[in-house]
Amino acid sequence: MKSRLRGSLLATAIGTLLSTGALAEGELTVVSWGGAYTKSQVEAHHKSFSAETGVTIRSEDYDGNIGVIRSQVESGKVTWDLVDTELAEALLLCDEGLTEVIDHAQLPAAPDGTPATEDFLPGTLHECAVASVIWTNIYAYDRTRFPNDQPTTAEDFFDLEKFPGKRGLRKIAKATLEFALIADGVEPDQVYEVLATKDGQDRAFAKLDTIKDDIIWWETGAQPPQLLADGEVVMSTAWNGRIFNAQVVENKPFEIVWDGQIWDLDLWVIPKGAPNKDLALEFLKYATSTEQLAEQARWISYGPARKSSNPLITTHAESGIQMASHMPTAPENLTRARQTDAAFWADHVVELTERFNTWLAAQ
Image 1 (tube, rainbow, N blue to C red):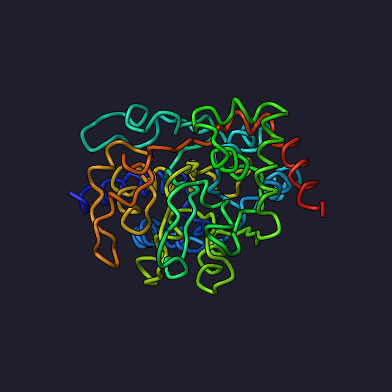
Image 2 (tube, rainbow, N blue to C red; image 1 turned 60 degrees about the horizontal axis):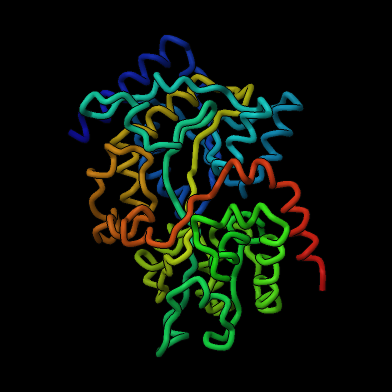
């Protein structure tokens, strides 16, 4: 089944590319987040697509700053063909006319013939973006640092008395403020209602104040597991797939705490004026097919955005362990979880980022 589906998808892609002449370009620049996540894309998608089409995929890393896309498009000097973004940023780029509209009817159907528009999970298809994975912001700790009592809740992350030591936090307002509110007793389904008010924002920053002197800030996904491994922090927020990779591939003594997880989507977007737009679309369709998303889930513990992919999830490609329970979408991991509200952040990102940066600079 796997080889037939892959062959069919690639045959379609190759036929389209030959008819448009896009293969003459021979190269596609795909931009993502680096580390274990990009490795999952390379192993699941890049290698097989390149092997069958002869197209060279040049992989570049970035830190999620969509200002680079804005600058490229506005200057008319676009060098990126396909970019992996978070949902709030994908919506903002589309609203500003900086990314190409994607016809969802062109996306491959599920193996049983279900149209892609019915097979993708709710909220994962957008005018200018197609989701690939569901990932989450969790926190992790080094279990060797806490041989007796171990942290189990969001509140424990802020308890310096019971669990002394430095904390790692992403240097960004999004997800950090939500996590602080959940740790302060706000129920996950009420987080954005509270955060939309001045009192709620004050409450989030007050909670962060309780550990401010013990925070080590991180900005890239590879940093949290490294901070833990080097002993610079005893616990850190992180992207769950990065910690999974450290646990399973690198055999690190890390544990994930799912309580208070803030989950999100990663989506593919095509910058307006991409030099290889047609080729980028063909790769996007291939990489978000049922089988390819299931294949990616063999390399990293991020949930596929398609319903039909989930039954195909099996074991980790390198360790052989079963992957299902390690997904952020596993029922036992969702008991106190909240999806990032992209619409909220589209409306409030400027003001809350400004306040966050002011708070950072204050002594």
